[in-house]
Every structure is written in C-alpha cells, then in structure tokens.
Length: 433
Image (cartoon, rainbow, N blue to C red; front, top):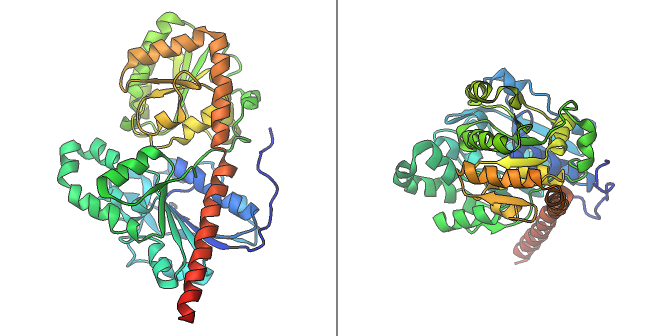
C-alpha cells in the first residue's frame, strides 16, 4: 500500500531547522528511524533541514558499517537538505552505539551558525552529552543549547531513552544509587538549558521528572508510518512454505531484551500448539549464544534469521499471528508500533512504555514481567481463538493510527513553529527596549 503521507505543502514561512541525532542509519534503532522520518516530513512541508548525524565509518564492526539501510541517500538531490556527519567513537559501555567526540575536538556551533538555523531539534540530548559513558565520553556539554543561548533561537530536546533503567541493568541498583548525584548532574545541567524538553511516553516523562525535576513534558511525537507498515504487507511473506501459526519478536538481541523468557514461554506454547514457530529478528551480542540454545532445544521451530529492513521487515511483521515482547526496558518501542500498524496483536511485559501501547484485552495482552507461563497462556489463547485474534488485529491497527508518524511529526512541527514565533517576538521586544 502506498504511504499515507500527503504531498508536500509548502508553508507560508519556510523555516531552517537543524536536527541533531544520537543515532542514524546504518545504526539501527527507533531513534534512527524516527529521525529519518522527521527529516523526510520536514522537507515535505517545505522547510530547510540540516541533519547532523554520527559518523560510524571508522572504528565500528563491519556488521554495523555495512548494514543495507537507506539513510541520507534518500534526500540526495534535495536542495533544501544538508547533512553533516559529526565525529564519533563507540560508547564505552554500549559499543554498538556511537558517541560524539568531545567538543574540544570539533565545533558544533560553527555548523549551526553557518546554516543559520531558526530552531534546533536534538534527538537524545543526554546520550549526545555522554551519559552512556558516565560523562567519560560524549560531547561534554548540551548539543544545541549553546547555539540557542547565543542566538535566542529555540532548541527542543526529545528524550527517548530510560537512562536510569540502563544504569540499573548494567551497573546494578546499588551502584546506580551511589552515583545518583553524578547522574542528576548529567541529566539536569545540560537538558535544562534547552528551550523545551519532551518525551514520547508518559512513563519516561514521569520517571525523569521524579528523579531530577527536569521540567520534561509529554508529547506524542514518536510514531510509525502506518502507510509503510500495513496488514497488506503479507504479500511479502518471508516464509511462504510455513503454514502454521507464527510468533515474531524483533530488536537488539541483548540481555535487557529478556529473550530467555521468550524461549521458556515457547516451550510451553508448543505443548498446546505443536505446529507453532517463532522467529526472533535482529542482531546483538547474545545472538550466537541464544541461537545455539534454541537449536538444541527446539530445532528449526525457533529461529534467529537475522537483521531485516525495508520490504523484508514489513513482510515479517505482517506474517506474524502474534508479536511477543518480554523486554522490561522499553520506553516507547518502535517495533511494538510497527507490529500494531501491521494489524498484529502484541503480547508484552507489563513494564515501561509497553503499557501505553498495549491495551490489555483490546489490541493484545500484558503479562507480569519475567512470567513465561503467563506469556504462554495468553499467546495460546490468541492462537486458538480466530475470532479473538481478528478483533485484536483490527484494534491493533486502530491504535497505531493514533501514532501515525506524519501526525506525530506535525505535532512536533507545530511546537517548533510556536517557539520560533515566541523567540522572534522576544528578540524584537529586546531590540526595541
């Protein structure tokens, strides 16, 4: 099905908007795909865009550098688009993600000033500053806020990641409490210099504000393209010879995604639905180890087919009968939205932003985190009841339409336009006084 994005409508007043992102193709994440769509939408709306994205051409694994994912190439030839790849190195505690080099090595302000940005959108400001390495890496100060301070133009920060949860999972709860004052400093000193900070989930908004009184606001600004992800994508069925029910999960295959819970649940599901198959898409540090365990335990019934994008990924979602999520670490998961947009019921751990996307008994089900037995029981219920599955599927699609990416980006654009007007009025009043 063709994309639901409307034709370009040129605004009466075209803005020059800089987008600085923590992740971009070939890095694969919800932040990267969201930034790609936002740039596309801003250009369609007639605005000029400077995209500042991480350079991962040196020092990264070939599996990252050589991913076949369209990035800036999509906008090649558009005279209103400009891209700058800023220098990076792998994050100390998150090697698959890049961090900017320190501001002493390069100058962000030069690029923003040369572009004459009317506004700056910063995707994941704390990651860019260096919170992933506890301040031992990253730019070392809030990217974009310095330009806003110097010029009186607005800088809007979009906070995507649950860094507190990340610290607890990697350092432990007690260590996280011990470094709490340092974390508060990193999370507040920089972000509070932005004109506005928003988060795409109420869960993350409340968590940050309760931890450090950050003044963050909730905004429904992150979604998925419901024209691209659609039930009709079953025409790209990646497993046409498989006739039985199919379960799908996708994302980074790392400890925080709780993949062993999926394996334990699958063993129970097989007892009730013998011809069921599960496919866990993606890549990550735990993939080889989990593949070996799954092979000895389930044979070919549970597979890790690899990383997919484009039509292949859309086909996997649409082919699924149920999308299963055991992760307790999701803020506002793009994969969940892609499955819902594909008309697939989602059964997810009752944690984080999952509870904002999955309506229990309406478009899927929520289960107690870590409870493989409950996950299995709910999945079997859906697989065995065709009428229930059909109702959940229809509701899943309706839910995703509320988070359709064009609408989400237009909400953000309205905020940008308002802040630009207010900043302009403030500068004019200041010059007249």
